[in-house]
Amino acid sequence: MREAKGRGAEMVVYPELALTTFFPRYWMEEEEAQRRFFETTMPNPQVQSLFDEARKLGVGFYVGYAELTPEGIPYNTAIIVDKSGKIAGKYRKIHLPGHTDHKTDAPFQHLEKKFFNVGDLGFRVFDTMDVKFGMCLCNDRRWPETYRVMALQSAEVVVLGYNTPSINIYWNEPVHLRTTTHLVSLQANAYQNGIWVAAAAKCGSEDGHHMIGSSAIVAPTGEIVARTVSEEDEVICVKADLSLGEHFREHVFNFAKHRRPEFYGLIVDRVGAGEPLA
Amino acid sequence: MREAKGRGAEMVVYPELALTTFFPRYWMEEEEAQRRFFETTMPNPQVQSLFDEARKLGVGFYVGYAELTPEGIPYNTAIIVDKSGKIAGKYRKIHLPGHTDHKTDAPFQHLEKKFFNVGDLGFRVFDTMDVKFGMCLCNDRRWPETYRVMALQSAEVVVLGYNTPSINIYWNEPVHLRTTTHLVSLQANAYQNGIWVAAAAKCGSEDGHHMIGSSAIVAPTGEIVARTVSEEDEVICVKADLSLGEHFREHVFNFAKHRRPEFYGLIVDRVGAGEPLA
Image 1: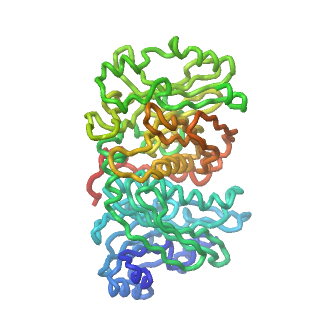
Image 2: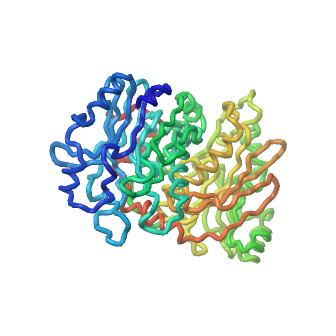
């Protein structure tokens, strides 16, 4: 945060589940996971210094963590904290990947569907620090609905954290695709919505499990304007001209002029793929 | 078509408005445009040889043209013709770009909203030649809803034609972005839906107006697996393994498991961008 501030940053983006290891890779009972890895209040004594430093430096931040509500409901959560150190927005992850069963043949698990409930807050946009921010988490970034719902609320910047293992446990996916599909998802969705996207990941080895990193900042042009190059802690920083997105939202992606929702019904009427319409 | 067949092709994709110049660049009255550039029947004597050759070679094809219905309604249309030379599917362009007024200061016009009605057939999928084909046209390829609605009908391959001028008449857009935004749109939408996408354009100079070309075939991995390199007539060809998309549709993009339409409502409830939801 201090390095980012020194480079002029007003907003810092941290990864998903930034306060713990990416524990959904481990098989355990829900109770154990909640005891070891979940936050029951936010802020709390362990993270208060981060909030204090944000206020002192006058920067906002986004951070992801495992949230356990007072009612005992577990979510994969992210918050935006403003420059005064106050929580200005909260998001609970909606597109939970993975499985609930113990895949004993896999090199590791992906138990987000076991450890988290589907988020109940929708894809909201928060007007704070003179920016309309949207938020999402990890797998959400691969679903175009995520960005579109926020763009329809006039989002200007979408911030997100993620953890992507370098190995696909489901099929023998060529390694380079792990980065390619991550980047093209950010690029096309930034462009198609006329928004900036800032995506921050853990990288390299965490507990011996390798992750792709490749944190990136993408302009509304669809171009990657900053990305990490190493597998170490690294700060990337851009001056984001919010008016750049306006060119796209006024012309090619002028939603009011060009969208045709009367033909988009299946997007809400069907969950899974079905038969062709007659 | 003969060269494609010689390279093993079973399906050939031609551009949008392939039978005429891209006439929406010219200011004229609707009546004149319809008299000069629209087809009132399909096939018709001028294109019968294309249909005959398809049947003779045993290849299917997609082609775009300006359609005037018996009721006098104009559409920007594409058809799929099967290996027997029969029309197996029709699409009428939904996302019409451009304007209706005469922009006298612009180097050329983009009058699709003047010359065409919005298509009335939706985004359908056609099961023909043992493939579930979706179709769209040009600007449709930049809207993620286009592909999603077809993927929700189990599309395996989306074919499309386009004409993209090398100059943006609305703002001083850097030239390289014309190609970048085209390609990332194809790539991300192919990946995010687990489909193949084949996109064919006119290229180089047509009546002195330069177009980007950059026809491409994109795999469900999001990777460009073939693209044109020249600004001349050119055939690109791939053997498309339809089972490749299944890996994505079964795991990361298993719609039935992972989609959450209860949070996508704004996509059909709003046309243009509005206020953040509370």
